[in-house]
Length: 282
Image (tube, rainbow, N blue to C red; front, side, top):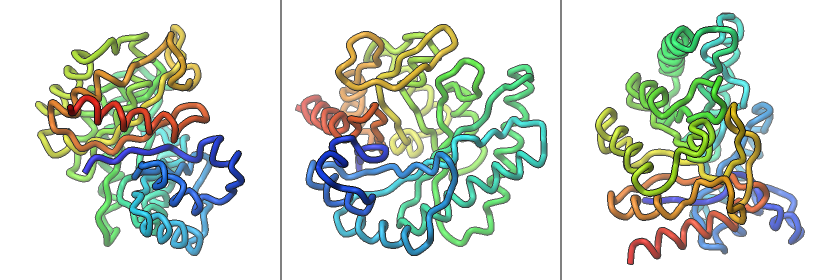
């Protein structure tokens, strides 16, 4: 089932007087959306009681929750103590996601730091394999999604993320197309560019992980080192545009989980994407 919705709450959610995330369930469903990503960007600090309460409300309205692990995970860090911390950040995110009643957790793979890219990539791959072993004691199903990154010095190209996802059946790619467009300095021009990414993924990972990939989408301003800041769909300069991907979703019968990360208009722009997919179907 294709799901689409916002990352966090739009400015309009608060402007209408809402204050609590559990209120977003009815608000999102009322706009014809069926997904929501909860960010643990600065740490997993939610109480179990609150997570269960939020999950129950979202379940009641048929809105699935995914989560984003703390932003500072880095599996290429040469410091073993920092790797252990990254293990903990991901584990606590997955456990909170389970309380929400969801299965999908996104994480940032790595940064090169002072290492050569090949060395950083090899270290990240070893440590992500260790991560999956570390999580083997969890007694429930989950999907973990390494994300494509937007800055040139970060580990997380399409090829790198797909490579990570060969390590374990529970690893599915998170393609952030705004990030991909940023690190390629405007490389996503339309349908054919999306098609190359999806064809490559299917060749390496197969149909299941390709059809049910995780997607982040927003327009992003970029410079010569990649990502600078998230924009809204009103931007006409940076892109990427969604229409090519909307057509590909229909042509390939994809069922991704799509999260909109626009700057303040996440729900509104998610609704635009939903409508574009419907138009492309006809």
